[in-house]
Image (cartoon, rainbow, N blue to C red; front, side, top):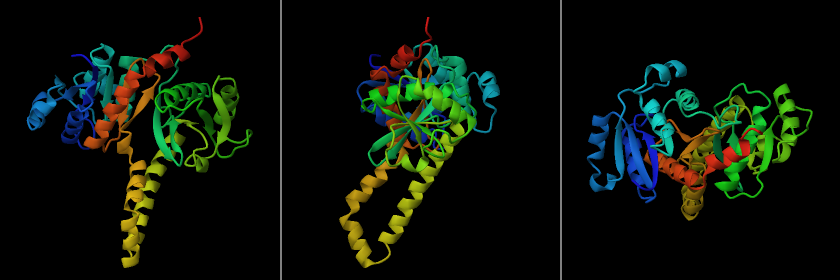
Length: 333
């Protein structure tokens, strides 16, 4: 089939397989896209039967087992060679797919991607890049889940890869890069951050110095660089805080008749705000630094999120982000 072939893990995530398969079918509205649904063939066939001709650009790839979130990543990848994650990654590595999306176990996906797809030459560790909404648009948080205890030299690489992503996908010229820290002053922070700061200054990026967490939602920088522990804490707090604020607003707007009238008049604005903080609009986070595109979808992804993740893949492939990162990150001869 011509077009962009994207493998989707039909068995990964809290809402698999029903919502994953529905999202894959919905994604076919993009005529560039063909889908390889990876998972238990009989289960997938049963779900697809409801869609008829809408699923005509979907191919089923059988995978007999599923890797759970409670399994040790390395052991699971080695022992479950017929799992949907392993089979999907092999499709990517063999060139049968140009991207792979999974809402399954993050650790297994990263481990499998590193072992089966491999790192771009010159990249020491792949990093997970997640878009965070801010008052001006989006910032890319990198690393948000892959390298909990990185070496200082990894962070400038994260910054370079994040800059390439934001420049080509989000259309930001010379993205501003900030190093997430407890203060703006150069001398503050852990040894990791202090050593990384000096390396960032000579990394050939638009490095603006340290950035505090409170300035991230204000759009102070376009790329937020940090270790995965710190990044994941910021990401999860942002998700929870946004949900709590929307809940508080709703409660206040339903408090009395006058508030309800105001809510009706401002309904469009509130819907737009809710959409801004909805992770389903982005769909997933790419592991940057791999030889192929692997996108981690949220564990609770529904059809809308999966459809968005496939759309992200198509854009990523169209812009040849892997090729652009390879050109920048290759080791000097």
